[in-house]
Length: 502
Ligand SMILES: Nc1ncnc2c1ncn2[C@@H]1O[C@H](COP(=O)(O)OP(=O)(O)O)[C@@H](O)[C@H]1O
Ligand SMILES: O=P(O)(O)OC[C@H]1O[C@@H](O)[C@H](O)[C@@H](O)[C@@H]1O
Image 1 (tube, rainbow, N blue to C red):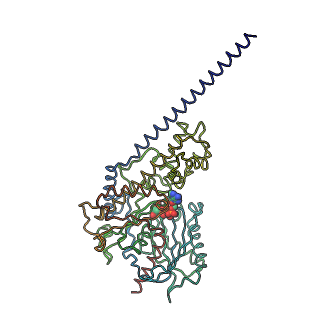
Image 2: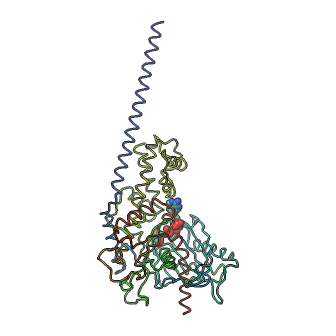
Image 3: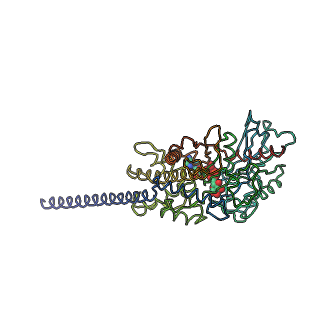
């Protein structure tokens, strides 16, 4: 009997040792995997670094590329498209105007009743609908008919608060958030699609004629009198309220910038100068590229898997469509190579764009000690349960790294524009663009859902701009001009009507 007891004891002891050994080896494996995840994170953070010296190189590159894009067609990746807008709204516009705004994610219809310098915007209404994804890859007719249908039903619900002035038609400002070679204030041909769009038969089409045809088919007697990029629209919307607005930047699904340039600086347009001596330029800055940009292998893989590989390199590092996917790709690599979330990789994490920028801004806003929100997002998006605090910290830091890089690069782009127009406080003053004598300020109007809704991105961007501008930052105001691009197109239509009546 004693031998049996002894035997059982030995077996139990052996089992206990084996269990202990398994536990120790599991813990060692998890620790080494976590160490691997953290060392991958450190490597990624180094590759994304944007020290101020590197940002200054980006600033200089932006200013140089702007100049190159103005002097010759194809002189730079920056298309620097003349907008034909040489007269911005002055605040005294009157009447009822409409705008339709096709963005990368949303479509907006807007009407505004303008009362002139004193009463300004008497009333405005707008509706926003998500663009059906199938229309982003359908036909031109389907896309423009969708816009005409939404506009027609919006006009049908106009109500008595809105009245066109006597003898005035309901003019439309058309905001089109894609690269267009303008041929006039109210016409232009689509150069290429960006973001998630690929409506192939629309390339080369005059987008105003295409939409006008669809509107006429549906009846309302309306005409498109202005075609603007949303960055140009945001500039017009900003200037309507503040005459110091010289630059507008969109940080939404995509990104872009527009600014007021001296006409004689646009030498690729020959010697036909507008009487105002100025013209708004649609930079299409999403396509900016410089060897100084901190591009990582993750960015290269992302770019190769988009619908427009090799294009929009700056946009893919800083805008709303892509920030979330950069984070996803880093987390996926950590999951596959360091078992960050355990032995299995969540299948959905393999799907592009399965982690959106709204998700990472939610993670980034988590101030709780146990990073509970981070855990909830991982559970809700990928079904990952019971993550440890250490894992949540790594996820948080990946989001912070990607957002900080994007924000600081956006700031460098803005300071590059300020440098080009001689308003960054350095001695390389551009000969033109006199600062408004009244305030001496330069205002940058910001618009777009990323900038508007991602507070830490905004904070990083403002801080980097101040760091780059130094003392000059006291003369530069970077402020949100909410939905400026939508109303901006209507205001430009109003400005055109006003000048036509002169
Ligand atoms: N809460 C959020 N946090 C961070 N980014 C957001 C948030 N909500 C929306 N976004 C970003 O804003 C983009 C939409 O921008 P918006 O300017 O509203 O529309 P569009 O790009 O169609 O003009 C989305 O694609 C997304 O990337
Ligand atoms: O308003 P969105 O959809 O974010 O668009 C911003 C920019 O997105 C870029 O992809 C387009 O080329 C620009 O024309 C546009 O201004």
